[in-house]
Amino acid sequence: MAEITKKPIKITETILRDAHQSLIATRMTTEQMAPIIDKMDKVGYHSVECWGGATFDASLRFLKEDPWERLRTFRDGFKNTKLQMLFRGQNILGYRPYADDVVEYFVKKSVANGIDIIRIFDCLNDIRNLQTAVKAAVAEKADAQVALSYTLGDAYTMEYWMDIAKKIEDMGATSICIKDMAGLLVPYKAAELVTAMKEATNLPIQLHTHYTSGVASMTYLKAVEAGVDVIDTAMSPFALGTSQPATEVMVETFKGTPYDTGFDQNLLAEIADHFRPIRDKALETGLLNPKNMGVDIKTLLYQVPGGMLSNLTSQLKEQGAEDRYYDVLKEIPRVRKDLGEPPLVTPSSQIVGTQAVFNVLMGERYKMATKETKDVLSGKYGATVKPFNEEVENRILQELSSGYIAGLSLLGGEPLEPQNQEALYPFIKKVKEAYPNKTIWCYTGFTLDENGPFSCKLNRVEVMGRDISVVAQHPLCENVSVRAIISAENAVDAASDTVRFALKPNKVFLFHRDTQLRLL
Image: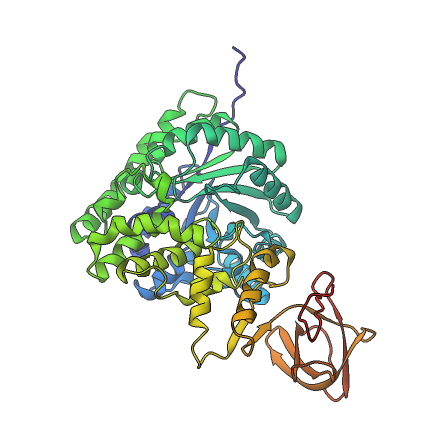
């Protein structure tokens, strides 16, 4: 047997972020974490994940802390270790898309306050929602890591993962993370996936998984043997269950092998001793639900990530409906399929989970469709890999029947991108057939061009942050106004009588005025 070349596996420690987000809904305070920073800094971690994800929200809403001060505390303490954050692409650390300039500024300030590695993901794996954050991170000389949300489904073939890995490398990312948020990646499939992605890209590959289904440690073993560069682990008091495999266990697993980390188990034991009383207190107070600490192989059916499970139990407890926990778990994959099989990760996990809770507690599926469910259907969050369920579309159509609803707006992302048209066009056609008198607004791309063929009478110019809204009129248009949202970098003479536009290629569609048939 040929000797294996030494390649110590690198480790990202998650106890300061994802581990306690998954087990205790991100309730660990800065005061609880700060005293152990010095010892953690001596371990030799590749990085420590300590910010982003739900930490920002939880700090402000529940802990009454300044999340920026938390980051600066970490930065002051970790002299030798890179700090890492989780970033929700165009959604930043929130649950809806933000303007590009907001994304860019948040990245800039995150790096300025201490972040070295920004792990960027999109809940639909729509790379268009990753581009702004990646470019901003590279501009700030941070490590721009793109995380692919791993999930199961007919569309998620090995070719899908290899193709998207190539696109990420072309985008300018500096590394790739396989983000297995629900513990769906089983050992031999992990080896196959890592091998395939290593063939598709030259970027370093990191693997993040959760112990929810009970296979995560074995998954790491096979992934490391297949060549993965970095794995995510959590100190044992906040490991396993819906969290990550234990750091100490993985360190011992690779001891004496070509993948030996060289970490000091005595030092790790001291760190574990610090966090153990915090875990025990969380158990005593009910903050840590025992359900989140066990193994459930049915996770492979439900595809529910750890952080989603802990929030789900809290949500049902508030409603006095803890006994409906498994009913909701069964409903989640049905809702996911209805909405085009998105990966279950923030915010799609919250959208699907909340809709599943409503469906179960109200006794009728989609008796109430949340605003976020409707936003997914309208393309606000991006393109899904599969078409939407017709039953859900029909429910939305029913809601449009109310007399006080004037129509429907398509916005967020780019509704006329080819990736979005497959799902949106049939739905919009149904809306128009059912409600011919209701208006449908579509926000799409105009390019200001003084020589453009589309000449309009200028009505007014409205300032909208980094963008401006140009409101104009054209005598041949059925609607009174044409509204163009363009970058504020473009100078528009508000005193002029006319304004000219060119339209973005592949985003112009012409219809016959009388028959409504598409001409081009």
